[in-house]
Image (cartoon, rainbow, N blue to C red; front, side, top):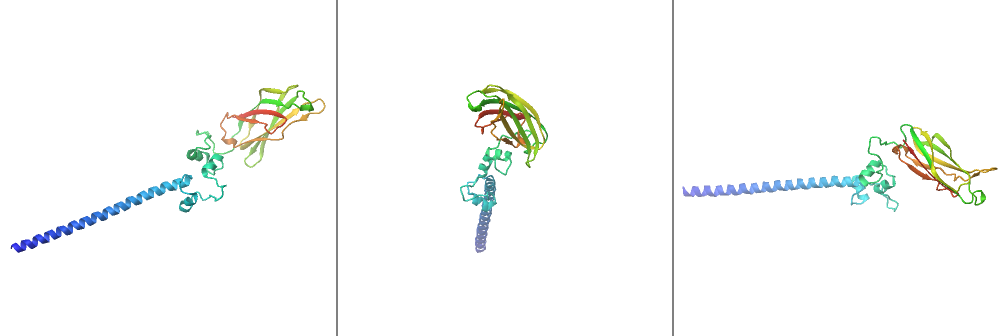
Length: 257
């Protein structure tokens, strides 16, 4: 009887050892699987984050790495002429929108966040325009002498579409007609209507020195352009000057509303 109890005890102990060994093995296996899953989840999260950085051009990896792994930043060049998306946003040459450049890089943030902001570069509807001449200084050798001049100043403004068509030509008439002056400052304005679909306004100044027999034309022959008219907010003053003119100084501004 005692021998049978001893055998039973040994069998019980052996069974418990096997059970404990099996339990520990299962626990280790489960722990290993759980660790593998956590590692995989972490790698997936990091992968998603790095993919986003590559898309924005902010990854610490090279553009070629981002291109090879995620298909972003593939327009890189080995030459020094390569421009990052950040640089393109700064220069205004990015294919992304101004709001995207503003959100991601802090460039092109001059757009309005209000509902009046237009994604189109041209006017959706006609707008009023106020044009104001503010300053003139004649050249000292007008008429070939050191005498004062008799300036007559006018402007021609071309409203041009995205396709390069002239939608309207605006003539301001004489905004200044003076005798025997060298310098003038003040406000001389003209109001007009700029038509819908205008994308560019081209301002061409005309500078004449009036004489009894033959007028002298001191115009620079240049026109000064402002693009993306549709994105200008109302009453946004556009200051310009006839900086190409070597015979006089001429300044003006205009705005739409």
